[in-house]
Amino acid sequence: MQYVKRIILIVFFLMFFVPVAGAAALSERLSVGGILAGAMQCQSLSGAAKENNACEGALPVQPEISFRPTRKDELFAKVGLAAGNGLNRVSPFQIASWAVDVSDDLTDINGSGRSYLLTAWYRHEFSLASGSRLGAIAGIIDATEYLDNNAYANDPYTQFMNAALTFGPNTFVPSYDLGAVLDWDIADWSIHAVVMDVSQNIDKNEYIFYGVQIGYRLKTALGVGNYRLLLDGTSNDFLDVSGTRNTRHQFAILSFDQALGDTFGVFMRMGWQDESPMINYRSIYSGGVDIKGGAWGRHADNIGLGYAYLDGGNQALQRTQVAEAYYRFVFNSAFSMTADAQYMQDILRQDSNGEGGPEGFLFSVRAALFF
Image (tube, rainbow, N blue to C red; front, top):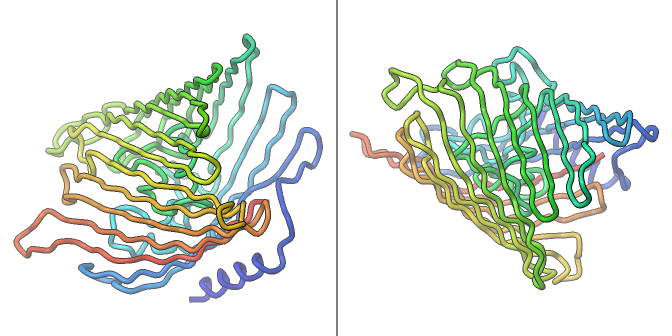
């Protein structure tokens, strides 16, 4: 395909010709930045009805602008553009193998009729006693920026690509709709509270989302660790498992990350979801290891190894397994490339034909430029 050739050309251009880049401060108050990323993904599968073997590319671009009229105020906006969908459109798996906003995600966002504009918000920071900070945000927001954080498994541009290792897919934390955030840091404790009015869910209903994350930052001789509890829910606007009446989503996630010296870090997520509505997964258990490149003289590089097990909910899926390994080669503070391998398996509840579900390997080369 023509756009795949363009992606390959852009990746090689970035690799050989891009100097050290970074967010540009146009003045003391105004700055612009963003990310340009590209990935070529190939899959070799068995048990799938179609597209057992395919190679597809995607090129998302997300420029952003920030204006700070005072030290305590900020106006921010980010737009998203993309060429291609990677394997997300043709893959038979329930979970996306690259958890970014590809071409299909950027039009009629959440059924709102809005396209390309991802976030646009205003933030004010309040003066509090020494050692604490309170920020308030209102506008079009992305709840994943404030909830379900993790130091080693949170960024699909530089860390794991698969959504099972980037976020907790047994829950859903919405993005790109009207909402408000309270962000409170008190010494080593943090509290993030989010409420959103989301234009449309899978049942074509508008709904309210709310979430609270409580975190604690632990400093030991081994290194810094972060320990979080996330409690989320929605309004009564989702069809229940019978499909005859509305109910709400309720879920909880524990998310941990801990440095183990200068070379190793570990992470873990555990999440559970109420089974009243129609859900694909009722629980998730994931974890992994981050290995910094200082062990072999490449201090900025890292290796990521992760595994996720998702227990099926009340729909067709019985369980899903994901294993992922990547090596990230860092050229400079702005540009990196990653070689990534994933194994995915969806086990379906057995029907009269005895179909077990797709499984196989997915291989990717990813480039990311922060500008």
